[in-house]
Image 1 (tube, rainbow, N blue to C red):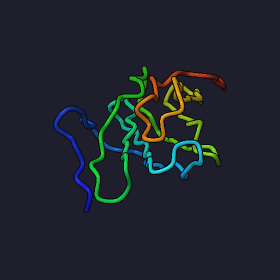
Image 2 (cartoon, one colour):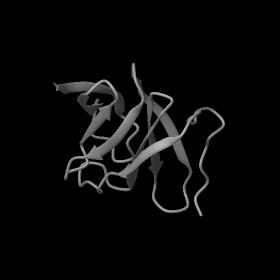
Image 3 (cartoon, rainbow, N blue to C red):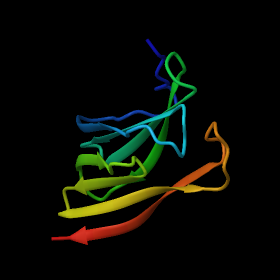
Image 4 (cartoon, rainbow, N blue to C red):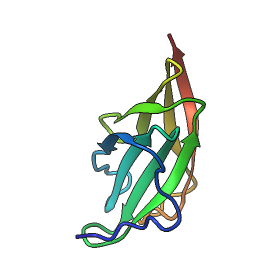
Length: 116
């Protein structure tokens, strides 16, 4: 099993959904999992280097309401987030270079939204 680092960041309330991003030719040997919670947060868990390597958390965003669902695009590049305020927001990680181990990956940014 791979160690999961929850010392720096973890959810503080019920986890409502977890979604694994399909592997991408853009970032080989990088695994991404998104989790969302009643605590109004979405956390991106990243594993660099494949099986056996640690998973590290990064806060995507703290929303105004609980977050119910997360879903990756088919390519694993865009994350859709559905929250309790009847909004769906789309998020994408900014790329700063072409580093194969993902060290040049930047912050996550909202790239779109849908309001009901």
